[in-house]
Image (cartoon, rainbow, N blue to C red; front, side, top):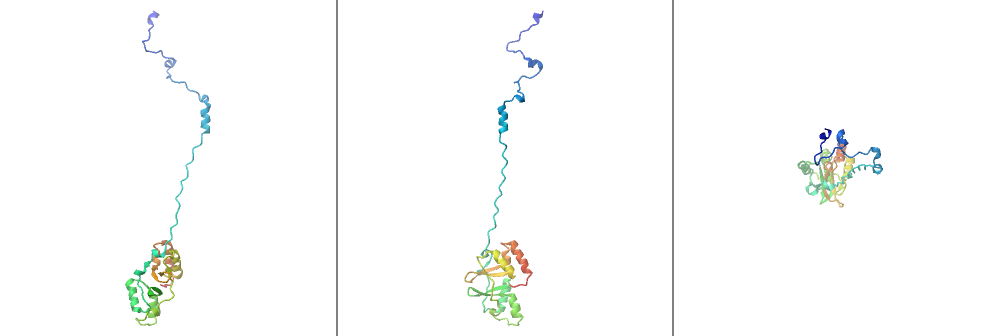
Length: 207
């Protein structure tokens, strides 16, 4: 009877091993951590630490290039001038038309003096001089001027120290090249020229 209960497996089937009977899935046996190869542990220990990121270099800060008077001045071709023989009435009319308080006095192209509205008021009108008095009698002969290739920073300091707002620009032969004002210079040096302008306003006007 027992023999009749025995059955033969169909061809192609395999006998299950003990894992099938116990419910554990088949697979390769794992090596315990203490039994791992020593070489791998040594390689991990000797591995170089990760490189720290390099600090990013900051771009170099460039100092602003110096500016020169000729970059900001009004050229001589656009500057109204008078001569020693020009009458005060005519000079005053030029000032009104050009909305300025200062006129360079030239002999040809050479700067020989400067006439300001203050000169007219104090030296001519206050003294009762006639309106046709020549400019040469009341003009200022000692003129503060600068060169076209002068750094604007130097001219700002000169204007500040002498409390003047406008300055003739000449070449080395003292030929008039143009005019520059403290307002012109604020375009290239807003902070420095602005401070100088504030200081000039606090002092008695010269030109």
